[in-house]
Length: 263
Image (cartoon, rainbow, N blue to C red; front, side, top):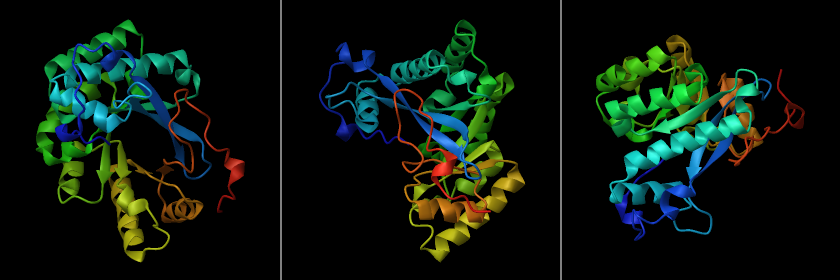
């Protein structure tokens, strides 16, 4: 997810036409561990190519410094959804789209109004869209988010909580928010096949996710050995460079036949 440290922001004017107009969504697949079929894509925003604003961290840090983060998040949502329609993502079975949302926008009534209008004008189905709470969301009172998310859930949006497993507030947030999707922190995923302690934590998260009725997703999977270990532990889905890099056009991930699947 995105950090927005203003110290990383270059000197850019909010009036610069290149600041928003060249924001491009990239789509990374989230696949089921069993057969590597696509569950969803996560939309990741990038700034103009060959620009200091290309990286998401710098793009959002600059927007925050300029007081333009609300506008940037609207641009990112609009671009991700309209490009998904253009690339016929909604025609791919029940494939969903994960969209990141900052804690400030979640509790902002104006953003909810914007989302309702966008859904109506673009004739989009909210049940195919998952709101992914950024990592700093867990630093806020979880009950506050539960109330703010209620109207989104009433529309049919799903909810995912990111980077779970490394913070002391994680369990309380899960109990309060009751997300449909839980995304494991990549610190628990990296070299999981080599670390007994990480495997124990992941196994505990598998049990917890099932008790909550949530789908457990492991991020940052880069090695086949990691994929194998996560599958054996019972993790539902995986995301990472091993399965597919973010692409401007939602790509078909690595075919299931490319890996020898465990029984």
